Image (tube, rainbow, N blue to C red):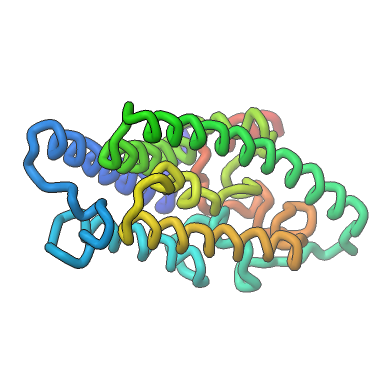
Length: 245
């Protein structure tokens, strides 16, 4: 029996389509010189108005929403907040919780190291002139699309993280940091402002993991259990879990 598409998944599908359109528009704008990309250079952000300002604003607002308890955002991104925490009725196994956080953190930082190696490779290509600032910007836009492909279609990081779905993902709010790190080598207000805010989101997330670990484990937070899930973002995994019952 075909499962109905949840409202959350519908919203994320629309967002994915919008992101693909943004990527196509940016690539075409670069290929056919439709717009100037000098906003990416130094203080170019303040010298002229560009459609890229709108994209910068969208990215900034996305990150601000990750720092605030908000509706219509996937639980996987919001589970750091007390408002999304539903404690289990039984007593929490503190040692099991500690083991879970330690194991998932080790896996998370394997991802961090691999991603760092990828960014270092991009930085080397930029240093030797193979890539330009605009190319690194386009890579970030590509990662902007890949972020939702990971959520809605298939996520390669699950091979390392071993998490069953996005709702329980240890690195859900690493997305913007991973998106914008290619622009680390673009020396401008545009890039640095996005990276600094992404680092802030990352820091808040990591601090909450260690201050409130019970919010990130399904055996201590009822909201993360399959039986309580309303997001149903990862439908392919949800279907397998239901069939296994």
